[in-house]
Each structure stands twice: as structure tokens, then as C-alpha cells.
Amino acid sequence: MAKADFKVPELQEYPEIPALVEGTMAHSKPFLSKPEFQAELGFPGELVDGWEGKAIAKMGELLGKYRSFQVYLDSCVKCGACTDKCHYYLGTQDPKNMPVGRQDLLRKVYRRYYTFAGKYFPKLVGAADLTREVLDDWYSYFHQCSQCRRCSVFCPYGIDTAEISMAAREIMDSIGVGQKYCNEIIGKVFKIGNNLGLPGPALEDTLEGLEEDVLDDTGVAVKYPVNQKGAEILLVTPSADFFAEPHVDGLIGYGKVFHEAGVSWTLSTHASEAANFGMFIGSYENMRRVSMRVREAALELGVKRIVFGECGHAWRVAYSFLNTLAGPWDFLDPNYPVPQHIMEFTWDQIQKGNLKLDKSKNDDKVLTYHDSCNVARASRMGDKPGGQFDIPRAVIKAVCNQFVDMPADTIRESTFCCGGGGGLLTDDLMEVRVKGAKPRMEALHTVVEENGVTHMAAICAICKSQFTKVLPYYGMDMDQIVSVHQLVSNAIVLTGQISEEDEGEAAEEEAED
Ligand code: SF4
Ligand code: SF4
Image (cartoon, rainbow, N blue to C red; front, top):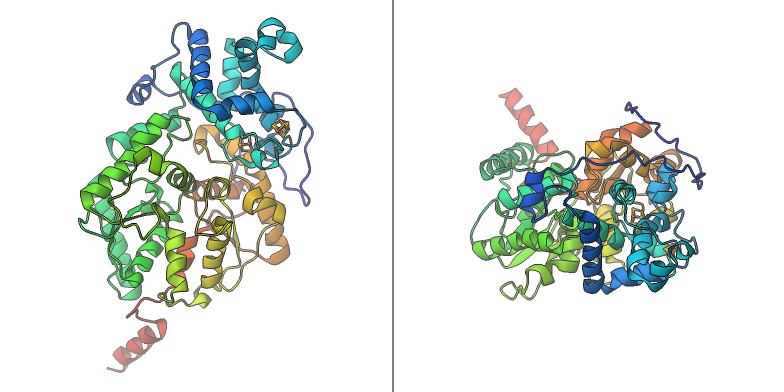
């Protein structure tokens, strides 16, 4: 069990709605972004003079730009349906982590400055001035929302707290109050091309290492190309795929699938990152700047298709915004979706019978599947409703014999966030990450106990990193989280692959000689 300097919630046999504990997470605040990171993104370096008026003006600008923002602020009837739906409330018991409580932190200021009743009878309508105390609350609690949209599924008006959270972060950035983790990372993408600041030569070395590993394991020369002009497919994948576990095992799997499909593909050092943290800070301008790198790489390399690797929010940005942010994509092959998800690609190859799969290679595992929130509630896959739930499960079942779903109220559109999404995957937020993971850990624990599940698969880089870190806090092992394409990689039998039997026979012959 990992040690914590906070109380790790106990997993319960049956999920319970916890009692309220006011202010219990008020101390949780991520590190502030340094002035140099702010400047890179076009934001003031520190809290500006006259910040109150500037924040209110920024709120007015967003209300004018995004009608949904105003509708969400106006339409809550305090019905309470969302109150027990947020994993951060369930894990922390703090009422300001109830979706409606979180929204009201901003709504009360909106009412004060932008509604008639709030201007003249503030107390009657719960309106409040924007003070330093309110700003501190915003910084704390809008960084305890992973923008997962679970609450919006249960709200009768479809109020999306994620959008309110994004707007709050954008207002704070505009007055010089940015979050270090997100803003530093976005700056790295602008300078180097990926979140981790991995330079081109390091990337090339890693990919060469993967080629050697696959050759040693299988006897087949599978290529992991980078900056290959004229390749058919540009793969845009999270940079964690280049080195982190279990992400890299997924990247090995993508390469094997492309190899067997007989398509040429390439990575790009210019767009060596699928993640787009511009979304987390609610900044469409920064989201656009990151997305433009994908367009520039596609044009430079002359590819015909774009495929995204296993990354939840990257797929949300790609699926929902790539066309408007960086399109038109009229130079790509119109016979394929723009963009396409690697799960769609692999499922298509499986259906066409292009992949030889030996499911028994995963017989040491009983799998379950974690629907990543961004994939589940902010995107689709394939050409049928629900494809984002069905296609990953279909791929897992095609490569594994043993699969069990977690309880129905914790999967598909009701899935719980891993606890580390929305720009919270940083060590300075470990307490809220661990506590926010509780509902997913509870659901996983249920199928571990009742069905003998040994591993949970995911298609999101943040989920994989988060679970690797938090599983030990709940008495489970960090390697119980696996990439879906890691399972594909285990099962795929490459054309010309040396089988274990062949290896055994060769060893016997060598011994006889
Ligand atoms: S979007 Fe997700 S994290 Fe944010 S309040 Fe709703 S349920 Fe909680
Ligand atoms: S479910 Fe919707 S309307 Fe009801 S309290 Fe929550 S945000 Fe307001």
C-alpha cells in the first residue's frame, strides 16, 4: 500500500453517498504558473492590477462568445440530481466538489454583475462580489474538476460543469493566475513539439530501440518510422507512448498492426504529441496553436491519412475540434475519416481478417475495461452510436479470452473519470487525484473480488499514468493497468514470426549439432 500524508478513503462494498465535510479540500491548490510560462501562452505573468474589473470583463467576453456558457449559468434549478455524481465529491466529501456547488462559485459572481436581480438584490439571489477569497476558491475548486462531463449526463438541463470549469480557468489565466502544470506543458509543445520536451534525436533513439526489441522478440523487422515523407498515415500519439509503461507497449502494438495491414506510416517530431492541454485551460487560441502543428506535419510529410493513438482528451479535441481549429483537410484521402482513431483502424483490420490473432497469449489475464471520460462523453468512434464503447470492447474480446465489465453504473456514458484528467495529473494535486479515483477503484475492486479480474485496460495516456500511480494507494498493483494495444501486441502473430515452438526446435537442433 502506498504511503500518503492524507487519509486515503476506504473502499466500500457498495458505493455510498458520503456525508458533507465543508471546506475539507480548500487547501488543495496546484502550483502557480511562472511568469515565463504565462508569457509563452499570451497571458499576463502575474496577478494584474485591477484584476477584479478585468476578470469581470473577461467573463462578459466569454458570455458573448459562448452562448452555452450563459445558458448553463442561467438554467440551473437546484434540483440536486448532480450532487452525488462527481467522483471528486464522492472521494473528498467537500460540497464545493458537488457539480452544482462548483458551478455556483462562478454563478454567484455572474449573477452579481450580469443579472438585474443580482445587481440590485444580491442577497436574495445568492449573488456575490468577486473578492480575493472568491478568486482563491476558484483557483482551488476549478482545479478539482477534471472536466469529465459525468454530471452533465445526469442533469435534466444538460448543464456541463466542464465548460464552466474551462471558462473559469480562462478568466484566471487572463488576469495572470495560471496553473503551472498545464501552462508549462503547452509551452513545451510550442517549443519542442511534445509535452515531455523530448527532442527529435531522443525520439529517434527510442523508436530504434523499439525496432530492435520487436525484432528480438519476433524475428520480424517491424519499423517505427519518424519524419518519413510520403508515408500514407501520420500517427499522432501522446508522448507518454514513447517511454512510459504501459503506454509504450501500446505503441509497439500500433506498429505491429500497421505492419500487418501493409500500410506505410510515420510519426513526426514536429507533431510528436497528441495531447492538447489548451482544452484544459479553456483556451481555444492555444488549442488552435497546438492543433496547427498536426496540420503542418501532415502537409510537410505529404501523408494521406491521420490516425490518433490512445489518448482520451486528445481524441476529444481531435474528434470535436480538429476540423474547425486546423482544417480544411481537403488534401487528405476523402475515403477515410479525418481524424481516425487507432481503435477504429485496428477494428477495421480485425473485421477484414487481416490480423492473425492468438487470444491465448493473454490467458494469464482476466480483463476489464475503463471507459475514459473524454472518449465516452465527448466523442464517438465508428459509424454507429455507442461505437466509442463497443469498438474498444470488441477489440479486447478479439484478442483476449477473458473479459468482464465493471458495474453498469460505472461504465459507458456513466463512466467515472480516473481522477487525474483535466490537467490534474501533477504530484502537487496527489491528494485530490487519489481521493477522486475512489469510485473507479471501488468498481474495479468489485470485479477483482467477484470475477477474478486481474487487469484493467484503457485507451487514455492520462488514465494509464494516473492508475499506475493511484492503484497502490488502494492496495492494488501499478501494473494492473494495461494499454488495449498492448493486448493486441501480445496476441498478434506477425507474418513470418518465429513461434515459441520454432524457437524450441531450433534450440534442440543446435544442441544436437
Ligand atoms: S465535469 Fe466531472 S469533475 Fe467536473 S464537476 Fe462534473 S463530474 Fe465533477
Ligand atoms: S442537476 Fe443540473 S439543474 Fe440540477 S442542481 Fe445540478 S446543475 Fe442544477
